[in-house]
Length: 114
Image 1 (cartoon, rainbow, N blue to C red):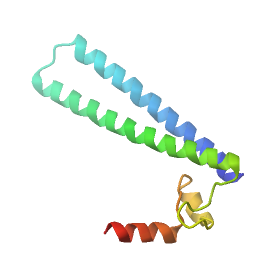
Image 2 (image 1 turned 180 degrees about the vertical axis):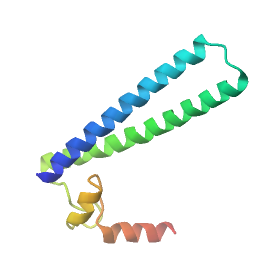
Image 3 (image 1 turned 120 degrees about the vertical axis):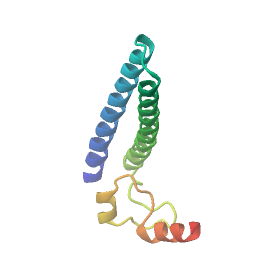
Image 4 (image 1 turned 30 degrees about the horizontal axis):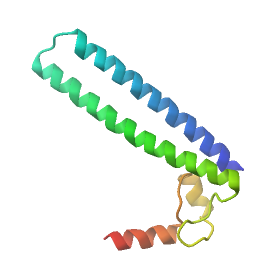
């Protein structure tokens, strides 16, 4: 399936970004513990560290969604709306390979939230 290959590529991209963020966090931790910085530098370093932690958490959530989509591919359930059971539009799957709702159901969900 074409989508399965797209999901695998996205999974690899996310894993690479997570690894890079982890490496940056390790380097930042080493720098903070080794060097004596002035308070302004420490504040900037801590801000960057917290930003990277947040980004890494978002990437891990996205990776989980991609893994769930791959599992659905394996059992033949990929591309089926979790809300109404209809097929998710091909254009939607191409732009967002880990989507679980058709555009109609997502719009209805957004309307309920507002």
